[in-house]
Image 1 (cartoon, rainbow over the protein chains, first blue to last red):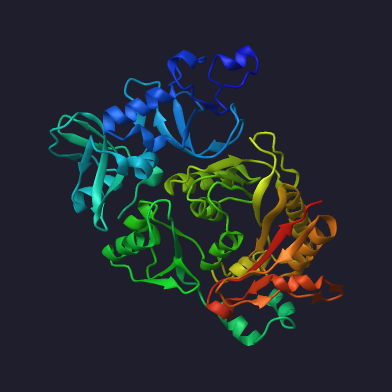
Image 2: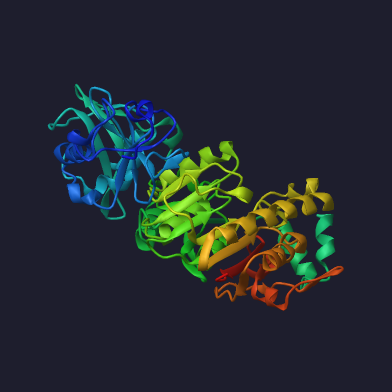
Length: 175
Length: 303
């Protein structure tokens, strides 16, 4: 992490991007996720291999909003955006974003639920639906088959026999 | 469409040009190779029952027979991005490579910035800048939907762009797809020319000169800068490039793209331009049944 004055260095500043510390021993800002924790989350929850992200850096801007970036940037970076949003931390259950899952969810091997065409259509439109799932509850990668291959659609929250769509309003589509 | 009458002396087969400008434009989309290769994107569109034809000059550009390209799985997944066919030309002319540092000076709403990211295989840094914060939100939305992780988004006046927030102090390439009088988009938006005045052309040309000059300065020696507009006015095209030739160290390069076009002009009203401006290209609606575009490619010198 770059220096800056101590008041900047020890708390999360809402309007700038700070690169995640590699591990907890390098953490300066209380409550900030580390790169190691982010990789562990994607590997433990979705079996996405850690090396998938070898060429990417992770950043926090805003409380718990984590971004993934493949380019070059100093830290901190006082700019509008860096790569794409990928994860919400600083809440009880971490939650990946729809756009991250669409980009990287194809590397996942666990907690992926496959939907048939009509169920996929309803999910993309933002509808919740009842269905059977014998895996873990919580946030799942929701996928379907398109053009001969599995393709992630977005993030679903599975609880009590119901799959809730978390596709953001602006990303929902009538297909 | 009266303003277009001024181009009668420079446009071949002017009646065919006028007739093409009166016809509505077809729907085109670019395959976003960050998310899917061409075959998969075309297969996804076929599953939705949408007839597709690849453009001869670029297999990644598709002509679609649908009025609702956004309501397809291919669009939802970010396999395709709907944009005018000729809008895909400037990034192809720029031709960046993976790992490059690329400046997109006027990037919103992001069609070309995300195309540049795809041409980098999403490895490198595309600084997508725009002076309009409202338009940046559209750019951000498109970048995320298309899965571009190599974009760094800045909100500056490109005429005095500062490297302060960045990790480097020169670009390998720059794209200036400048704000313009948009005459070439008349097929998409028939009311475009209602606000047209010669004063507006001259005032926007001043801004274009400032942006292009800064983009050349911000690019390293040997790097390339592409200047493009979607308009026909020589004041906004050849005259702007001439200003860059006069005030910075750069020279024009040939453009090799398999789309019918004519050379840039070297005379307009009382002005003459450097002969090398014939290396720029003018794309007219009646040439390829598209919108209109002007593209020039510059190499930055060593001074």
